[in-house]
Image 1 (tube, rainbow, N blue to C red):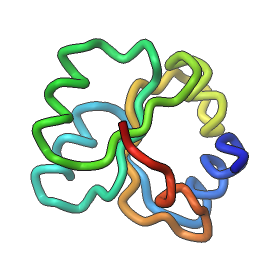
Image 2 (image 1 turned 90 degrees about the horizontal axis):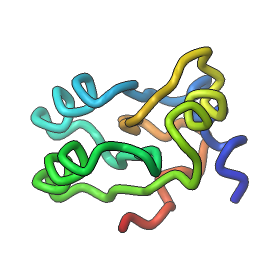
Image 3 (image 1 turned 60 degrees about the vertical axis):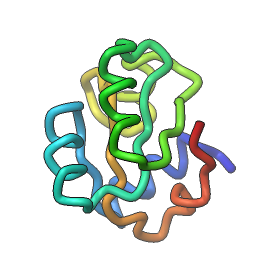
Length: 95
């Protein structure tokens, strides 16, 4: 799977949250199906996300690269996939 293409596809056809605060907010409501984190995401954020028992996929790039791959002009440490849309991102395996 081309992860960069899938990230852009989910941005246009699905529903995602951007950032750790927004992702945690929807995790508490049990709406997030997959969390994608940048490889340089702080360890305390990762440990906090693991408490929700949701699949977590570690993106191979940094937060700047994750933002660029998502088509955003800013860095992103965490993406929460609420609806995969026409993307096949929900088939990714978590850690």
